[in-house]
Image 1 (tube, helix red, strand yellow):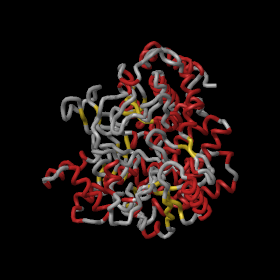
Image 2 (image 1 turned 45 degrees about the vertical axis):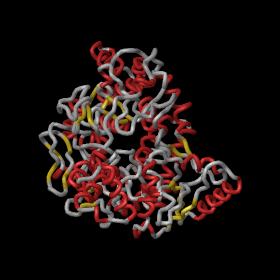
Image 3 (image 1 turned 60 degrees about the vertical axis):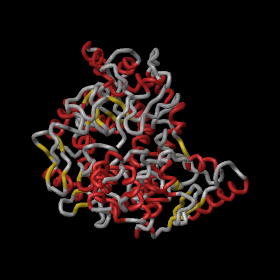
Image 4 (image 1 turned 180 degrees about the horizontal axis):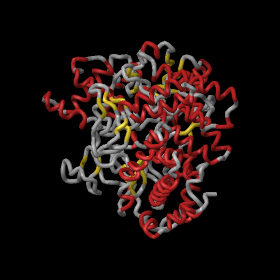
Length: 598
């Protein structure tokens, strides 16, 4: 686990006279969206070479797995993977490889690996997960979105939120890009067996939160009836084989609830140097060895199979929990760390409830809802709690509240009218902060400058080492909260939260960097602190004009929402200086909220 560091954004981009909110929106469309658009070309090797770049696999892992003296017969060249089931694309990529070799282009020529169709049934793709990192080619000549910064590939749940923001605008070019992004998600289901965490070989063993049917639903009239039917057929196949099959590792038959997992179990290659030190430090101390040595041995034990004796029950469970946490998308969060492989999360089961409704599986949805009400609903706290399948009990972390059990049930429409009232109260009481919805209502695993830990009482000086916890806020939780509140008629709350979030992003974008990063300190946004943060692997604000995918999409979603989240008067307020709480105290925001949205 990387330790929390002070924000570098504050040093790089000191505040200047703020730009207008409208300037940020214009910049998102004119510069932000193009900067995160990618496409595999069937005739030009340039885009493929761009996608091959991977800044996430640290140098020490490359040395470990791709050393020229390795006895595994590994190539030291970059690897490009194509599905055996897409023979036309395999031929096109081989032609690109030959073109690169014959032209003498700069950079190492790549090696092409064709993934056998059978490898997804017998899990023989495991060797590509563990020690042969490379890019997975998607449907050529179809543009799609990537998150940006170090994330230079198609990501599962990021794609849904990015497509939602673009589709809300109503611009034909953005509609086509949203459609291309969703098309690539379904391409993965067809040719790689599931929507992957991302299209790298080391992500073949895990998926991400299932937004598949919701993503298809974004495309509206841009899909023909046949296109929609074909996509929904693939979504049904993914639901059955990935999430509901007996051997898929995600279903608990005894409760009917689902959990995150992934197979085969392995450590993630896309972790910065030292990223696993916190996870394995105690085990390394018990074995009398440096933690980096233990981490290296674990990589070798799982990945290369050279010496599996290091993998005892404790290490296997820890690695399985880490894999499940990363499949959840909430990597990292103390809510799921060290327990994710035996946890039925409220958020996942809400997503599958909506999936079942979208697929017309109403009996399955009803069964899931009944199980969640019986096992997850916490009447005292007014939330749906995660359910521990090992201990057969609801997870108890009072008074900590997270969006998983509050925002997701509203968004999915799972809550009854009475439960929705409780969830709304919990949301605005425990999770609403100056900049929007926070990841947890207080720190779960805390760090503080100058000391190893700090009080559990929330404060600006006390924050979580986990980037999905207090005091950080993320775009997907905001967008889901707005829609969930609107679904149940809590319009004023939805509009206020959208305003808080957009105001904070405008403040960050106002700096010389003109940047929209991926995560924010939504608590510091209300006390004059630095809302752009560098927890774990850092912020994307390392150069001028950088935009992170779902953050920019959230602004488009708020400003073009079909329910009119931001009235013209609220848009005008967003151009001003001053905190949201000051606007509330003066009554200015309430007056703007009361104005017609259109």
